[in-house]
Image (tube, rainbow, N blue to C red):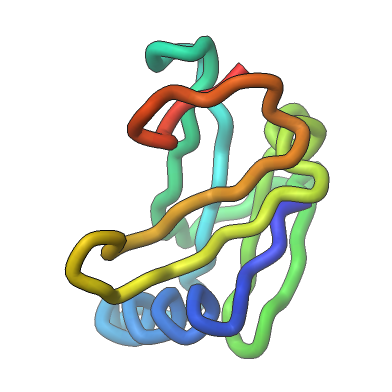
Length: 106
């Protein structure tokens, strides 16, 4: 299961609050594709499945489907707000290789 840093938790919480819809969760998935074989996808979801893996970080609920959870063991979602490295990034120690943009892995 993926973990969120404190800065990522804060930013995701702000974005969910801006959605103004109760019960929103952050869904993280791994999809086939991208230049390295798999790509990360993150979005807000109001529906969860009984087999989703769930974790709570502060006020943020994160859900991951079981097959994606296997690929995200030990991974960390971070958020940076700088001039050169702004946005979310995933550090996944299970990835054997990643592409230059950091959005796909194998």
